[in-house]
Amino acid sequence: MEPATAGVSARVLFVIGASGAGKTAAVRALEQRGLPAVRCYYFDTIGVPSPEEMERRWGRGDRWQEDATRRWIERLIRETSPTAVSVLDGQTRPAFILPHMTAAGATCRIVLFDCTPAVRATRLRDGRSQPELVTEQMENWAAYLRREAGALGLPVVETSQLSIDAVADALQHEVDVLL
Image 1: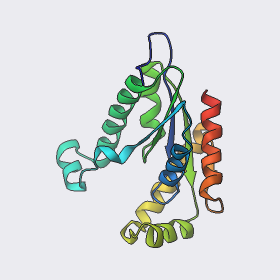
Image 2: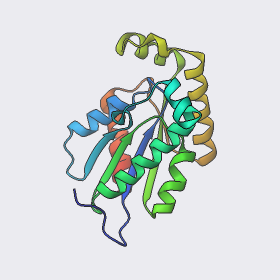
Image 3: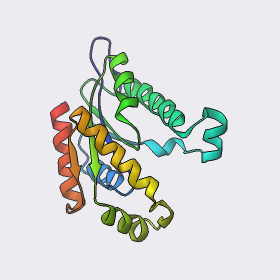
């Protein structure tokens, strides 16, 4: 896609949430719909350093997350056509998204995907074979994101009882709002 032209705002939909909330499955389902004005990206494709590497290079994991979010935003603004929407699936804080999008003069929506702890645990253990992610820390992260989304009035998609297609429908609605 062509880079956004001067005076025309890039439009980006950020799909955030803790591991197991259904972000990646829904964004992949949306991508498979082949919508011409939608391009999907996955935060973790840039590579996630180990906690030790994050500590060594950035001082803390949240500083890595903020730096990675900034780099993603710069890339998305360059790559998003003025007539399209880029969708980014990732675990990041709205507080890291909003200042960079505002500074760039770009338009964004942030939607939080959430689910119950029991559903998250089942998805991580059975669906993804990542039982090591079923932790109190992950639940604290999910709770933090819920509080931040609530404080900012962000839309929340509770995915516990929804099919992947239904969650992709919710994403497509968010894309339509941006378009």
